[in-house]
Length: 138
Ligand SMILES: [Zn+2]
Ligand SMILES: [Zn+2]
Image 1: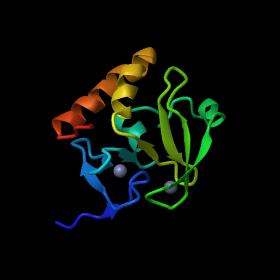
Image 2: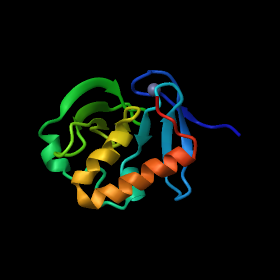
Image 3: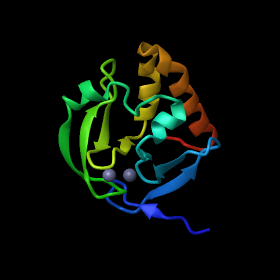
Image 4: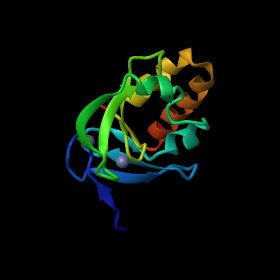
């Protein structure tokens, strides 16, 4: 089986591989840094939210440009908080809206989402499913 590999924005090497979740959402894991890439709406789809980043408008105001390249469209990633309740920063592509979580950030997001009631169970489920499927961030 030939898998298409994408360049990890952090490792800058083709280390991102497709991963089909049992829900039919495709995410990309980095073999090297254990970051996770979600294409636009994948995260929202996965956790049944209307938006990948629930408070995107407010969060965009705090966005900071990074020099990192989007693995999918080669746009530029900007760093912004995942939510106002957390200090987790995610990297989001300005052009295609994909999101990159560093290793363990998704776990932190799960913990922090306790503050966002609707998010809590969903993020817990995400992390549990990933772990069941072999995802072990360092
Ligand atoms: Zn990586
Ligand atoms: Zn992009």
